[in-house]
Image (cartoon, rainbow, N blue to C red; front, side):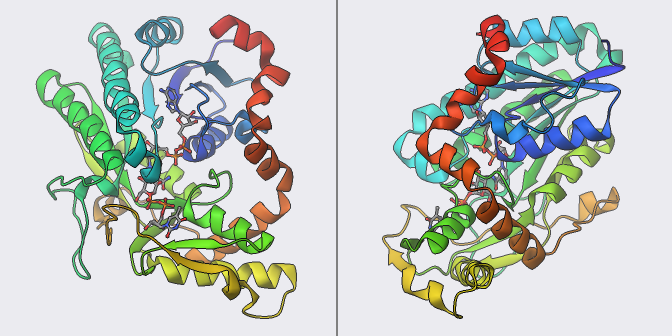
Length: 358
Ligand code: NAD
Ligand code: DAU
């Protein structure tokens, strides 16, 4: 079945990518949504189980660094645009394996940009945008005051942030050198269902529920700016459709919280959900050694995207409540992620695909 147009979503089996794919598949039924994902530890096809069988969702198991695979997809589908979401995303892992982060987040991005540009040069009338999903972390750390704007200089401080900054720089270079129509978004910390339980919010929910220690790095006073993942995804669609080529767009709900306050908010919700007496969760909070180079605070000003009509729709506490309920009612998902059984999903359900694409 042919579709009016096709878009490529990289990293669509991860946390944000799976929400984006679900959104695009349901909203644009006349578009083919092609998902390219290497299914690393962070990629889980179960995250897409409710849309994988949709006629307009096409999953391809492959690596963004593999130019042959990427070029083959461009030839086959003639993409109208790219949402580049795939990355190594966890700061703690980047501290132990910076080379992997450089390979995926820098080299992988350059490979994708190069193939997409090759295609765009031949079919510029049929290629709209290359959207690169970046992060607030590229700007470095703020003190108690201040906020980053789209004009703030880069000052990445973790290997993860440095690798994302490297990918961003190439995207900007492709716009300035070749006129290739990139847009770059910088989002704050996302939260919601399907986040890999190594990140603060899902880890805290599960450990409180299971009576396990919750590690709070340092004093817990570091500040993060949180956004409901589906609000982020709607913003990506807005920027993809209406963002200026070469443009930079911040995505923030202007919702700053100290980590320790997030931990308390989660603890209260978990206690309430499980019918425990108030404050039970407190016994599991542990202050542990700080993350090396731990950035103190991030905050973004995001007026530009509001000018395109986007607003966040889900408040932090409402989103947190939904997230707690999701993790506590999706124990099978959690168990399969923890045991590694989730990695069999592709083999069990999509062996034909695996055979044709690996
Ligand atoms: P994630 O770790 O949950 O998912 C990453 C996905 O990319 C996985 O499905 C993985 O299999 C895939 N992937 C990794 N390497 C690949 C490769 N070489 N080829 C193909 N696929 C590969 O990440 P996430 O938290 O959903 O973040 C998605 C994007 O958003 C990243 O670019 C990240 O930098 C950015 N971001 C994340 C947040 C956040 O709070 N999570 C905030 C701002 C920006
Ligand atoms: O700011 C956007 C970034 O948010 C994204 O670019 C990253 O991909 C994403 O992983 C996230 O990075 P953080 O490092 O902010 O997220 P994480 O959930 O790992 O940590 C949030 C805060 O909580 C951070 O200050 C470190 C702290 N923390 C984290 C963990 C996992 C703890 O105190 N204890 C923990 O166990």
